[in-house]
Length: 352
Ligand SMILES: Cc1cc2nc3c(=O)[nH]c(=O)nc-3n(C[C@H](O)[C@H](O)[C@H](O)COP(=O)(O)O)c2cc1C
Image 1: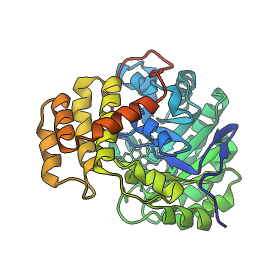
Image 2: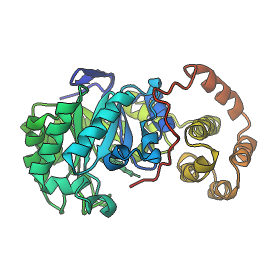
Image 3: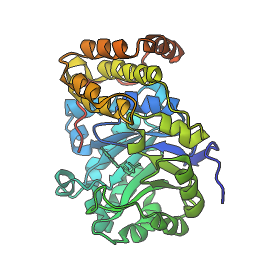
């Protein structure tokens, strides 16, 4: 069945304008990334995973993840943890902060998380997983979604047993990244499991994993019956991939456009994280934006060595002087003001 990527769909009562979802990525999904994703056509954007324990302890850095701007909406904020009571408390904070959806992480394969009984571990602890979803769904009025992997071990089909139970417990949508936790990011996402999950549940399913082109997105939607596709790594430093997937517009951006988007991203990230934290955080983005043959390797390396962001900006503009006009136009087109619904401290985005 052909699915038009530009048609709306819903998570509970929340309308999602397109079938394209920007993936939650630790150490990547800052507000600037999410806002850019919305501008380039993602119908839903997600925060990276936020520790429910950190929220409940009032940890300043963790609270910073709840800085939400109006232009991100619809936005899902993802929480992780293993205790239903603490998860409930965190979910209420997420709702109060203005998120449209509370997403629960049952997919993180990183040991730091799994050893606490959270993330992908919950795929093998179905009773606890259901208790978490039931408690969270009962505590907030926004829709609750779950993002999971196929299981812990290679070849696991745990997600197919667990999925229907999570829906019964109150999940309004499921996202499946059909790799095992053991696989991390190796091998391929097996979307035949996504198709099986769609068959088993009566709620929308989002397909995550290896969606890198319009052709792939359309094939996965058509063969799985998923309601939407989620794009992660392909959008790192490359929002044009979102546009290509949505509209089939495959034109490579000019050097000026690339530099202007990077400069805008840098400026917004400085506003969000502060100059000091943004300086380190942004380094990996230089390679992502300027790679793909857009700029020479040596230039990317040079930028990461520069001590201040002002110097990085100056070097970028030296390399692509026309970018300042593009940037000015972009800034003019942006909605006025950087509205933040909660006056919270600036956070560090560490990963996990
Ligand atoms: C750097 C990085 C960080 C990630 N962090 C999260 C996270 O915080 N929460 C989550 O549910 N998934 C996380 N993921 C998984 C992605 O959301 C997505 O499911 C996965 O990358 C597969 O999609 P892709 O092939 O489009 O990248 C992360 C992936 C990457 C590469």
